[in-house]
Image (cartoon, rainbow, N blue to C red; front, side, top):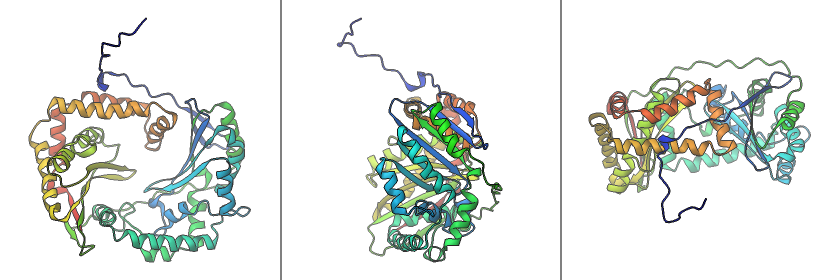
Length: 427
């Protein structure tokens, strides 16, 4: 059948599509470790992620979570950091270790055919990491220097302060690194944290790409061996102690010509019924390039190159933060415009056409995520780590499709209340 090139194809809104999250395979290794794997894609590549309860929440000493992640490839009893990195580079592989507020993730990207040679190297890092003293000394010097440089940047200071004001400076979500904390780190601190938090018994493993039974069997052969007994880490409880004052102006550079603005409030995590509808309201308010904040403060006023609002859901709470950088002369005016947009959303119904645009944006993002194995696994990993099943995904899609202007206005009246926001301007 020939195609008539003179006739434009029909245009469909993302709300009209059906969304199917490809099924995930779940396997228990011989030692009981959970392996979640997805066979998708056509390229001979694989991504494996080992996720541990090793974020800032589990620190027994400040800065140890980031230091342990940063030095994870620093050496074992049989291989130096140079030899480990040389082995990875020889096969064109990439091994990344990152610690967040709640979790630490070790990610391996490589060609499937190189797994038999690389998995033993990664296994040794989980079982035989020694954190050499000379590598720690280098890390401490570099981290201290980097901190000094970053503290000169208003946006870095603003990010630290808004979290501390929201959660409390001693809370894991509000605590930040100091030069004193970095200097106080010892090799014994890292070894203790590593042995407890990175014990393989604590791991959840996610594997995606062009993989199948042979790769699962290989993972079982290497990571399914008997585990040393390990007590699962206890998740401590911390009280949130927000700052008493909500309005803060910080002078970081007397000669600065740019100011960093952060306006934020505490907000529930994904388990709260308001979270998913708030994703829609946040997108409309400041969550994408066509948002209200961007249209007003960037496009109309010209105060900034970009302004965004974002939800940051954590295991034990979360936040909603608006962030931007502006010239010092217009910083206060930009703050007023943020509150003006909050007022409009509380007092006026959103136009159906604007809402449809936001729905298409959110659902279009999901369509993109369903196109490749790594992004599909990212969806599944979020569900699993938050204790949800696949119904959470489908319920969210349905809510994005059907949410109404009335619901968004009620949500704005509940959460976009200026008196409940903390405000930080750093110049």
